[in-house]
Length: 146
Image 1: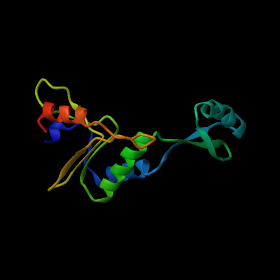
Image 2 (image 1 turned 180 degrees about the vertical axis):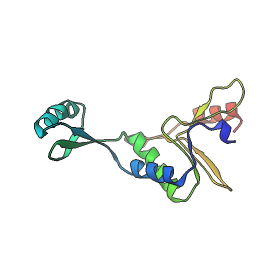
Image 3 (image 1 turned 135 degrees about the horizontal axis):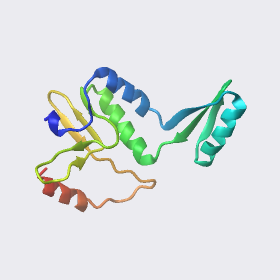
Image 4 (image 1 turned 90 degrees about the vertical axis):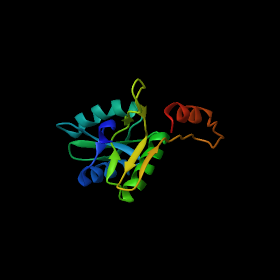
């Protein structure tokens, strides 16, 4: 089955590393310069793109930017499933599963598997609650014979 799956994490250390990154609600990065003034000049560009200063160091500035809501939901679910102890987990945002000959691979938001269980999850998020038409999901399930 693993040959049908692209970008899967199998090692516990890889899963722990991803868990640390996905548990954060913000993207974070460090902008370095030979002096703080140079780092501030570089950071000005990032501020225009929505990044915020977290702290200033001697020669660098730490900035952060909130993740999109859909990514926060996906990461939160991924973290919950990782803490449940699944030993095979999807890696990255472009995880795909081959569903058959002549069909395009199916993009899955979160995939987890252990010796007894396998879950494929597609996440949908929105700023305000609303009703969802499951017609598209039902059509895809019929197409892939899920």
